[in-house]
Image (cartoon, rainbow, N blue to C red; front, side, top):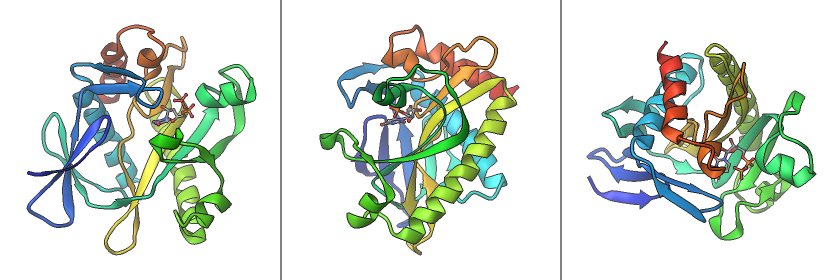
Length: 232
Ligand code: UDP
């Protein structure tokens, strides 16, 4: 397998099929646009195991994803897509950059989820972007935007139920979409404690990457708790 791309937390490898790739989950952690870095043994395997269960659940509920199957502790086989350079973010509770930007505390429960886009561009620091800006720059069409928003709100409902079932609040999350060779939009990338904020329903304990971002303790212990609860 040949490496096609290396990102901060994953590598993309070719397979013998033109339209399939392998996504290898790494133990590298970064935060603050790569300013804070560490290698955390076991993180990649935990994220892959959690992403696998979530993608399977979403597929069962009619969400089209790039997931084909998980091959081993670190590798997922997926359909090859062209990633839309947009970070699609849903917030159910205020936290992180939202709380900072608007000068509010974390933990405000919103009546309705907020839908937000940012331009996936590390050099620019992933700036916030609205629909018109994304269309003007040719990053997405109006029809694709509409589909992405509808699908993302559906995913939010499914994820909220899924996490509520294991006693966890889904505070916010980031997802990415890709377009396959037939022009179909597929949910891609990962959904894991690296890309979601997850708080214990009873104690508000953080079970996500904020453990690393804010030096709150042992990251893999938090992620392991999420996986153990998913596995029942
Ligand atoms: N997020 C992510 N990758 C990014 C930026 C954000 O996965 O490059 C996730 C983050 O884990 C959180 C949500 O998107 O679940 C909202 O993040 P926020 O905008 O609050 O940014 P942050 O506080 O992480 O800078």
